Length: 104
Image 1 (cartoon, rainbow, N blue to C red):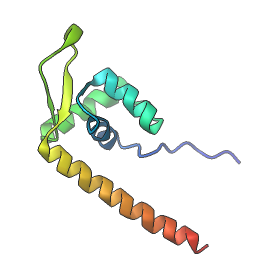
Image 2: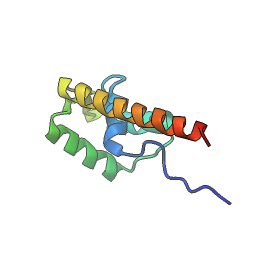
Image 3: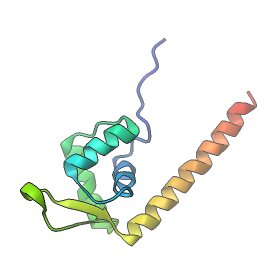
């Protein structure tokens, strides 16, 4: 029986924040980093919709455009705090789930 691909950590916002934790990036570089990091390919609409929501929430900020008009983004201090909380929660859940699997 084939296993459905449910994605790995497929929330676009968390993936974007995790990508930006490695340093500032423009949209295309974020997409490429996420694909390499999590094996998830975000569409441009999904990517830029999530970027807009993250900016609105104050978790990332756009920087002045660089080469060929590409606009890089970076984490804000609030984004760092939020990402750390989310990843810690995921880590806790993973440890709990793995512990339960070990008893089967």
